[in-house]
Image (cartoon, rainbow, N blue to C red; front, side, top):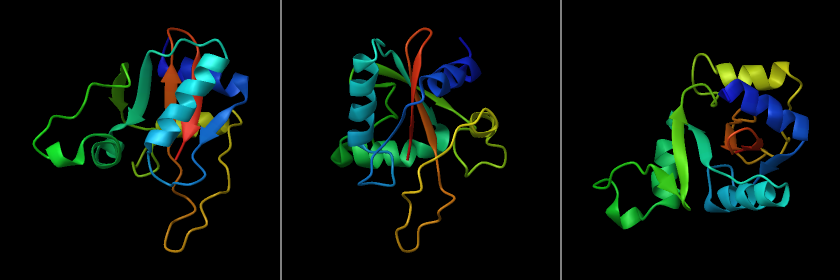
Length: 137
């Protein structure tokens, strides 16, 4: 399935996972997504993460002591990581996020911290072969 089809499948499921305690890509968010996928009968295979989130991934999730000497991981928690462009609002064209909102997807209004833009909403997709759970940070 294409990433568009996976996002549509995730929207049809009407579940959006987010970590209410953090505004970055966190271990907790990834674990919540895996748990939700398994509760919904989805055997997760791949995280689709925007390539702009590499710094968050390396600093928050991987061994900080080994960074920046370590390579960007290809998997986490036994699941593949596929870096794509267009899930994050930092890009000029955030094609997948635009598709998500055009299809009726919305983001929670939880970003109310001082100095943090309320427009910073980044999509993440946890997918099996043909099903997906959506998350945001």
